[in-house]
Amino acid sequence: MKLLDFERYRETREKRAYAPLMLVLTALYLVFELAFNARLLDITGSFATRRDVDAIEFYGRLISSLALTLAFWGMILRRANATYQARPNVIRALFLSTIILMPAAYYGEKALLNRIVAHSTGEQRRDAMFLQYIKRDIVHNEMDPQKIRLDAETRQSPAGKAFLSILPLMGLSVSEGAKQQAEAAVKEAMAKTVRHDTGGTDGHVFNEQFAGPAIQIRARFNRYEDLATTYLRNGRSSVARMAYMNALGRDVTGEREFIPPGLSFAAFANLPPCVAMMRQALHVPDDIPISANMTAEQFASEVRTPMVTREVERRISELDFPADTFVDGQEHAQIGREAMEAVIAPALALVFSVLGALVHLYKSTFYLLYSARTPTGVAHAVVSCMLIAVIIALIRSPNDITRSDLFSSLETQVNAASPWGLGHVLNTSIRWMIQAQPHLYPLNEADRRLLHLTFGTRDIDTTEAGTGVKAPA
Image (cartoon, rainbow, N blue to C red; front, side, top):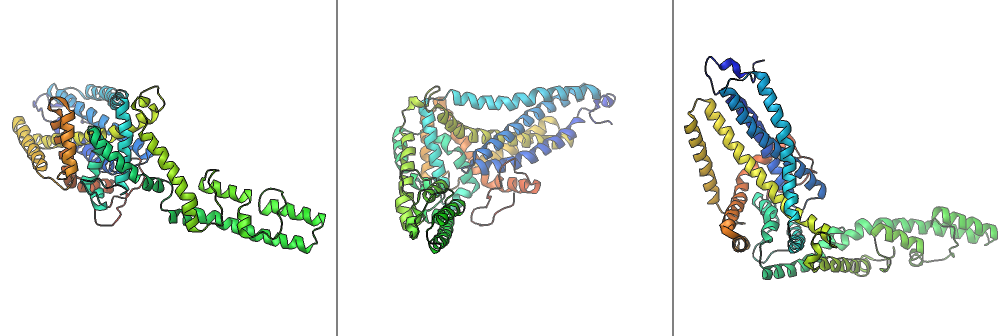
């Protein structure tokens, strides 16, 4: 086997023998990186489950560690080729670099996220929790920000997903006045959010959650009537009473207690065992009345509305907690850290993914030209010009998101909150990512589907805006 044996090129002085191998390795990396970028955008641009976020973070760090390792492999192979190293030396160098760089990059990226979260202030953590509510409300179409209209088509578009991935991070820089206006909008949308979290509309919950146990109680009532009829027919004797109570405990209530014959369904439904069954099925607190005899209207007004109101008040109270209660060691430190991580992690993963794709796109194109005997300086110049041209073209291609008043307002406030002109660099990078995704996402998603990769996440709707067709995972 002559692969990685550069000693054989000593006589010919061939110093480009490593390039075809690096071209293949870099191209293979790109195939998986681009597929990952598509799924990353689907997850971070929606209100994903914790399982999805954990899975995408794991694969993101794994792919980032591969990217760093591959970058060092290029330097190792170039050096091995230039000095005509034997294959055992090359394999040893590649192995050592892999076992050092892979864990270092994987845990280093996690440590970076932990460090950012650890150094966040109580106010930033409280704002992060609030911004997560905003993102959720927008994703579920329960709040429409005043200066931007994120309809379903826009939200599901690649640009919309990229914007929603980064929105919470940009929102950390907004002014206090803007936060107060947004907080009012969040509180207005909170009832819709709670209804969504607890099963959907009142009618949907009634049909899907209330009706099932209510039907079971109706069946028990029918059995009760049969047993009561038998009991009366047997003359209410002590033997008949004992048999009646045993049957009630076995078939109706689960408890050996006497239930007077002749109860209406309304009275039967209010018996403690029946009420307990309904409470357990619908998670209704003890101080809110519930009965299987309720109509849909009664259920909505007497059960759902009080429950939603109570949960809204609880969530709103979270937004009003003092900032110092979110610092480490205080009452709300854990939820504050989780909210901060939920804001930082998606944007950080997206940045690393885009950077990895750009760097390795540059490298793969360079290795292609270099393998074709193009002079080194010329190859670098050609690839650099191509990449710069693409970056400039995408920067100058605004879309509905980046033309919106909300995005412009966020850019202004990020600039004002960032020292030394870093805000302009950050805004330009964010603008580029949002404007690039409509061009890149379709190709990346096609790549992902072709490879049947989900990166540990659930099958989610990757409908292209306006098509109404769900893509396979």
